[in-house]
Picture 1 (spheres, rainbow, N blue to C red):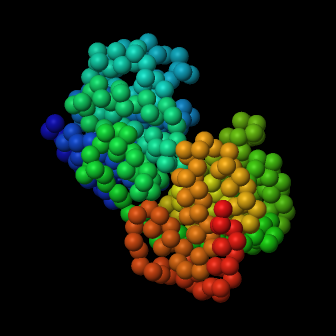
Picture 2: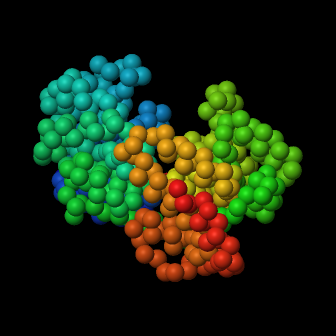
Picture 3: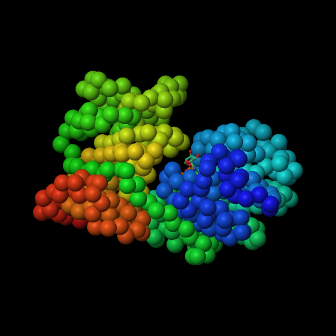
Length: 411
Ligand code: ADP
Ligand code: MG
């Protein structure tokens, strides 16, 4: 291994330098040490396995929960000249991909977790050369996480068949409990955990009770030039809200949701990515595969699914580091609906879900610093005031807030 990671970074990816903890993670992986990297969305987790994959002898097996995202990643990797393939139920060239793996002609092989348990796949891996297991969205392995996927539990037996191959688990969204569970479930030592800073100082957080959501969001759009994302609660709601907001603000506003005609959806997404003033009204699925650095605001028309989801969705604003705003408008009925939803999930998952909802309630209801509550949830202990959230900028009447909090949070 003669090459130096920085020169590979510059030559292959065209980036001048590593960001944040990337270098630390890459060094561990190159040294063969199993690692859990907890890094916020947009921090550049993919690079921490892609780069070592090009330097190590053998293939990096990447476990990823969504086939659609896998294909985006595949295209991105191939674009910089990384030898990559996917092996999923929708791929037609499986025999060719297997051959490439056995010939040592792949840096990256993306798979869905359910493949990990098949004897067929295990045999394939044993006949070739595996350099690294990268487990993306690793919180899916934990029942404490906000997105548990039972298939992720099938990984451990496979990993254990390759005791000399290091494991790299990646997640953006893990509270302390979930992190400990990921380490445990995937057999990664505690000292292998690297947590990056979660603070996004350029995002101003603002959370208000709803009175007239449409008017409140129209005000946000009028006050905030530049591209923005509005998260609606339902598919039907997105189109109606988009039309109303277009009318009310005179800005270009389009809808995006999974039920739209694929061609229209593709066109709206492309138009948004290219635009400097468009607002997209979407369901929360929008934004996952999108790399648009100059989003100036994200507005939630209702409560997100969890505090992790709030962090992730608001995190799509201001990736370029310039000032951005995150508005959330909520109502008591949002909490009631969320509690009802929790009552319907499997009993063993209820405590985790309830804790996350309460964390969101505390964030919505606090008279103190929003950023502090948000970061505390991710295990950081920031100063008591941030100077860049609604409450720090104009302290509210504390008595009202605590009163409503008590009403909605007592389950
Ligand atoms: P994550 O999975 O952590 O959300 P990604 O891996 O998708 O993030 O990376 C987000 C963006 O950051 C991508 O456009 C990627 O090319 C870019 N990026 C990653 N590492 C660097 C770096 N060292 N310098 C500049 N840009 C980077
Ligand atoms: Mg990622």
